Image 1 (spheres, rainbow, N blue to C red):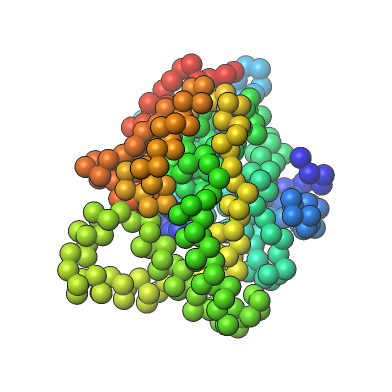
Image 2 (cartoon, rainbow, N blue to C red):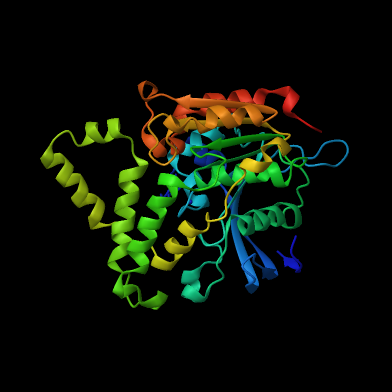
Length: 360
């Protein structure tokens, strides 16, 4: 881990916590954790790195004083902790559900470069350190251990980028976590179509003359084009055919996508977030994972195409691993299926019910 003293949003969406029966029972608490003199793997350093987070529930300890009910929930690229406190995800936290907030202490951080955590748009723009997933994992670990005084996690789970972080947690801290539930991702290097679409969208921003090396007065056009590309690739072909069954409906959908695509977005934040995956590759160390793993993908995911056969092969190398592929017939709608708990919450409930996955 790096030296330094510490003090104390689905995939691209930022949801709003809505008033509901659940909201009346329990509200998320928010806080900031500051890491001083944080050194990045790029060799760059920030005197202060702020990690914003939300929590649900209360931390409990066992007879030996160890944290006994902590869960870490991780968002996707361009999202934030706000992504998990909307109406759709709130169902997971209700009494009797897989992540009952009366039973678990749920920690939901904003990753580096996202949400209310330190990011380029805070003022440094393209002078902000070029972070990668390893840096994000370190900041999460230090938030959990130093900031929240948690010495054990019952579960790490996340969507898309958060799912990739989940794989990394299992390898980097194998004795620290009992269960892993990565959603819509694969534990392999970002290559092929997955890297190519990232290259394409990053180029839309960086090659835009209005980008001006990160010193722009208004958002470059490339941001709207990038977000529109996201909207297209994260959905599933069957769902898109359903909502745009003819030319006019498709054109109208495209117009809606582009009309507000760049709202509340920053070009450099997005560029950095996309490139943070550049060195991701858990594949060589899958055997290090000790946690019980249930990995869930969607049959029509453009970003993680099942036809490559990657997950069927690699899950066999995970000691306590299981792979679930959600078929289109079950309602899968592409990469966005990771943001729809109705499609996978039963598998999460089964994982949380497994007694043998508790290492304590």
